Length: 553
Ligand code: ATP
Ligand code: MG
Ligand code: MG
Image 1 (cartoon, rainbow, N blue to C red):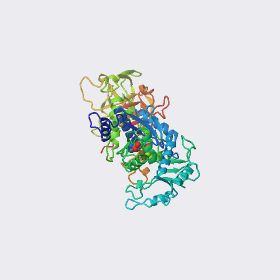
Image 2 (cartoon, rainbow, N blue to C red):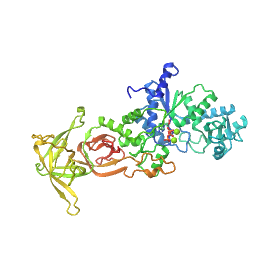
Image 3 (spheres, rainbow, N blue to C red):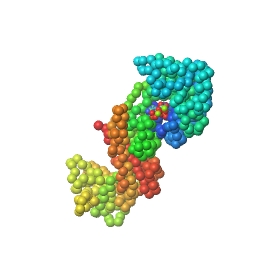
Image 4 (tube, rainbow, N blue to C red):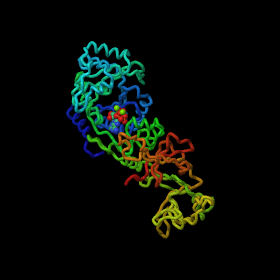
């Protein structure tokens, strides 16, 4: 945000630049390709790529692909698409931790040779039990004092596939009494007999995150390795590995507060559950706070970037209200989305005194504050549709829309007064409303200057184009769907998060809008042509956000 002081990370980067420590910062965004990116990742992307462009450095996109059992090429591709779509570019700096497997293996042998790593035969369960607790020191593994030679032989055997999964691991030899539990001889390598999406069957041992990350950063010459607060303890291990191996460069890990948002879950694991259990329409369901869901919903990259800028970077955990994100969409779309007319639930209006068969073209502005958006012509005729909500047969006093005997202004058109209603003789349901119009009120004022409070939107019945409208609301109905660790977050799904209305109408100028394009339906909200389900001649519109915050208390 212009004029705002630099956040604490940018301050560090600026100081390092000023002191000459790093004339050009090198950052990285290191997703694991085990799911689609979500809005939390956008915060990290904007931070890492933002710093690189503001300080004339570079930012790497690195896939942290060391757990083949959960990773897929499809995720790799979606992540690249999403980062680009957000407006960022890694140029030629695309990396995969798996490209370093051989180097990492050599570093592991080096640790063994230094007497700083050993092969341990304890089971996962035993390792956990030996690890101790915050108040109790850990117990040393009986395998901790194997000789360098024995460790090298066993580790090579691990690589050669001579043992089964879980039979042995490689552990760092640090300190079983460390106040930081993570430092109590952490596992560096485990056996996984799973094919990797890039290295195939070359490896059956895979390095753990803490061993891989610092060395990948080092190999790429990263200067500032930015991660979220949960990794504070991991920093000790990050530094230990690099210090012990006396690497030529030693990136600085800095932690910032992750993004937490109300009314959603944010972890890929939980998002994957929603996808796998069919509770949403895939990773890009417009209710999902994935980047691809937000894109399909109609969010612009600019609105997501400005949201990230607005929430800023801090050192303390915080919870951002969902309305902040929704407002970022509103603010952006208010500027950029042309206005148009859509009717969600149409009600027929017949203008009894309008010349039969006549059609005229009324000029409508495409943006109330921006003449450069131009105008279009809206066909007007004696048979219109209005919104069902804009008519009440028996209205309360303060209802300024259409009702028997009451007069309203048609946007860009005439004044009309309701004279009668047609009802279905069986059901009693209103099927059409009869009105008269004042031919002198064209353009929205009358010569006698009489006051007409309500203005409603409309479409000419013969010209309106049918469409499907999907009204989306928040996916969860409570602020903290995963607040209670014992309970299933899925019980808090909002049953009204999607309402499909198959017989809505749009003005003819929207019939050929390309998928993904956003418009404001006047009085209703911002909408976007759904890129996944729209067919030529059968558009589907997603509601991005309403015009005002309807959740505000
Ligand atoms: P998840 O728990 O959702 O699976 P993750 O941290 O395991 O997320 P990664 O693919 O490892 O997912 O994340 C890549 C980068 O994005 C990391 O540097 C991580 O710190 C950052 N990141 C992930 N979630 C958030 C968040 N909510 N806010 C800020 N940064 C995040
Ligand atoms: Mg991770
Ligand atoms: Mg994760």
